[in-house]
Length: 105
Ligand code: FES
Image (cartoon, rainbow, N blue to C red):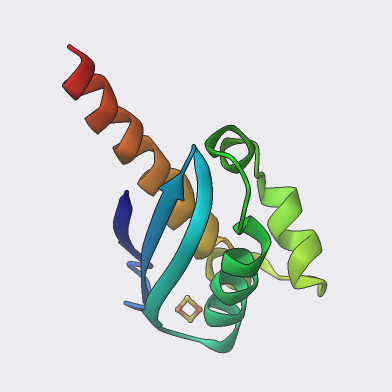
């Protein structure tokens, strides 16, 4: 249901996220990515965290949730690494909602 790719323009690291929904909940989630340890650890942990969550719960995930999940302080540069996962998830969900809106109209 969600297939979305984002990259960090500064370093070129990228994440492609795939989410399968069932009854409006995350039934399965996978990613393909290449990048630094922080960006890859962040998306890996995020995919574990979002299993079985509803679409509404996914929308509520904030920057603070990701930083807490990573568990170490990040400087300005590393912040973008840590949050690439959230950018991919958020924009992927927005894309899905736009597609659903388009189908409804
Ligand atoms: Fe590219 Fe971390 S160095 S996302």
